[in-house]
Image (spheres, rainbow, N blue to C red):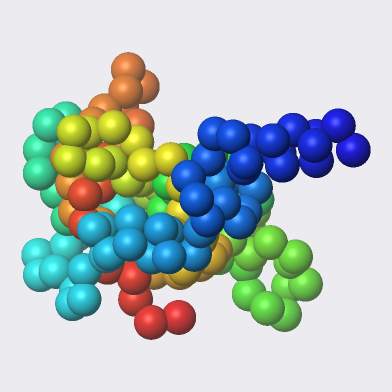
Length: 170
């Protein structure tokens, strides 16, 4: 009850007109924000995630493709970020009765060398504060192609600061 009251106060006092969801965004503002990042045709020259992990250096411009997945919940709450896995890595088949095939539970060793984190960033390089599922109309196992700048952490993990994305038909 207390959190409901706080949400109503937020919507009335602090949020822009049209507050209609728990994150303070409206369907129209999400669509407008998404249009900045979504490509209408698939970019050429994209490489699989596994190849990118081997070839790409930090600060390289890169175009990478893969399937959203790699864990039971590949999306990051509160920001437009998720993990993608190389399409050569098989996810659990329907006949294996796996409730979350996108976690690649049967292929964890293969996932380690074939995964990247995608973080959608704005023109200034700051993370986009929106749920990627709503922003891009995607879900687990969606094939996606992203363009952006590669970053590497101390362990060599690949993060793509994406500025453009193409969502393959689901």
